[in-house]
Length: 152
Image (cartoon, rainbow, N blue to C red; front, side):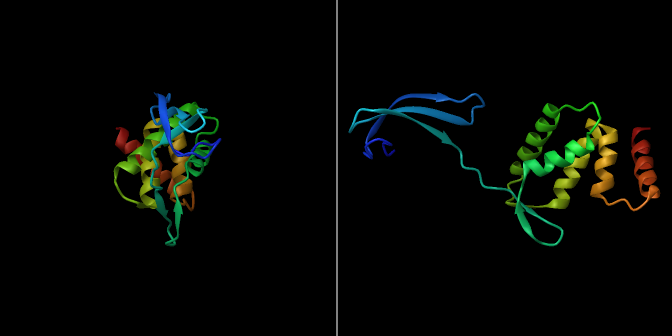
């Protein structure tokens, strides 16, 4: 590691600690050239998940886009932002565990819909109406009938 003070590349690690979430290691180092101390942080470099859109374009998976969609669907519902953030964390972990570098947006949308169904039924119908592009009331009724049949 290059010393930020003198540029020397020789140092020794004095202390290492794991961060709160366990995904960062904080290291205190001492430069062997100038004897000054500095801190470095080590994290795992994750390969971005690429989303393949309906028109074939590819873009990086965005937690913010998913959060915005879920927030709109859960508006005025008893679903906390903490619950939404946990949902997104589990979704991203599930996507990473597939081992695929590119995932169709359709697959991500279906995972969100499936998760929302168990989280909040009203939010599920709201999200499904936008995601599946309901054209009229009959589309809503059809989705509600399917949902009620699965409950009974």
